[in-house]
Image (cartoon, rainbow, N blue to C red; front, side, top):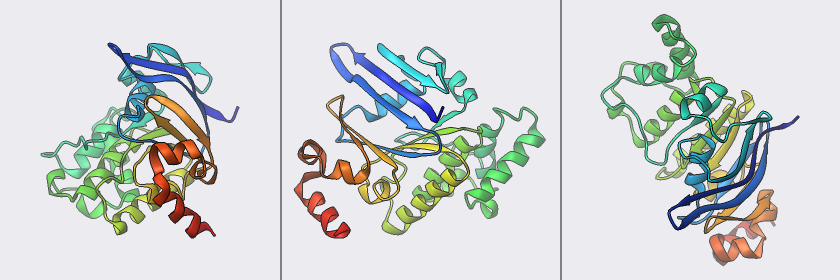
Length: 248
């Protein structure tokens, strides 16, 4: 079975507000999926349902063939699904190494082994020379990378990355793209919530578009960018024309 994650008619309500309405799509192992749409479309809510920070009110979420819809967040992490957040959540007064060790402790309960794992992950993320720095001293780009490193230290098979490119300059976006591709090469399946189209569209194998809590499109980046409903709801004619010019 090549599908590692299946979202099957997932619905989430907050009182009278339907944040996710019967959303379905499958995620193939080792792929990069872009989850896009305007603000308030329900992207982060869906992430939180997958990681069980929220309990879905309808539908099912299958991970490696197992129904995980009613699991706990820590149980989901132990199964191999890691998550980062829209607003960076690092331990600012702890060092870079200590932040990554928090993730490493999940599968390495002893301090020595957790430190070894954290150092290994730090090297992958370019932090080997900054292990003793306080996390608060890092740039915004580095703090976002540190949060991904901490999630990576938990040993995930799937990573949910929520707007890791938001607020970055062009150089930092290119670095983030390189990092995502490196993670995929290591065998990680990635789902990216992004508004930075220049970051997600060139690397996504598939794009899922949400609007007002519903899935309005799914396909390759080229298929999605020419979808009239997506253009109207999200891209606008300006981005569509720019993409067409760049791919002509």
